[in-house]
Amino acid sequence: MALRIRACVKTHPGLRRTNNEDSGFIGRRLFLVADGMGGHDFGEVASAIVARTVAYLDDHGTSFGPEGDICGAVEFADQRLARAISNNPTLAGMGTTLTAMLIHEDLIALTNVGDSRAYVLEGKELIQLTHDDTYVQMLADKGWLDPKLIPQHPQRSVLLRVLRGGDDGGTAEVTLREAVPGDRYLLCSDGLSDYVTPEAIQKALGSSRNAGKVIDRLIALAIKAGAPDNVTCVVGDVVDDDVEPTGDGEFVGSAQELGEGALEAAEQKVADAKAQGLLKSA
Ligand SMILES: [Mn+2]
Image 1 (cartoon, rainbow, N blue to C red):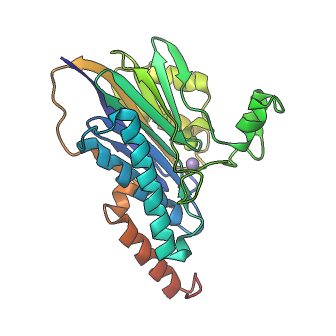
Image 2: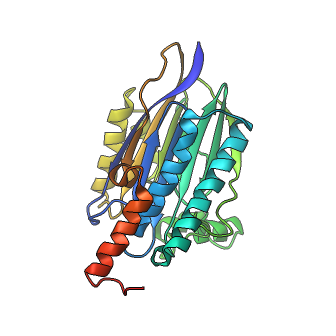
């Protein structure tokens, strides 16, 4: 018997956006959500580059243990953003959040940059595992803002840290947790957590054994709330069984749309935008 995570991933562009800048991935041992941002449509490029780069860990060994592996992958992803921007300065300003989870033997390593979240449902209790790198969360941490006011705060989406090929984002903090069969994990972009209350998330997570149905419910709740943003969810259950995971993993959102050549796709987008007169030629 071996511990692993059996997961499902889905994304929805929401009701007000035409493009999806979120990416999601589920593999044999690695799971992630990335929410891109930036001028024009380059947020989707940033989230695709980072999702594709970090997902590489899914098939590659743990030379430095789960913490070292995840830190190295985040650093490498940030360097790839830096390289993409230095090769093509039109991309400057793009960035992405990342919340990633890796299971290794009986440990789960979790990292996050930005405001995409990880939760765990332990029995009936919903616990938020990540700390938002947002301006309002910082104010609340210092005791300057009542956390109850965060959901309505006009600056609630201002991020203090993202991956942007810069000097701050590439250093990942990793927390380790024990993998316990029966625990259900949720990774989500702020398109869910900004519009659906923790109580409603908790209820939906406990509503079915089927992770896909649970995600359908979560997305339906975001849509009921107007879904102004892209919504991406990974729901994963820790199981102890002998079933070998198969397949290459599954991407959704911009990492799926742009494919492995996210960088080349970015360069094509820049060229197209220039041709349409949307950008000044360099
Ligand atoms: Mn978002």
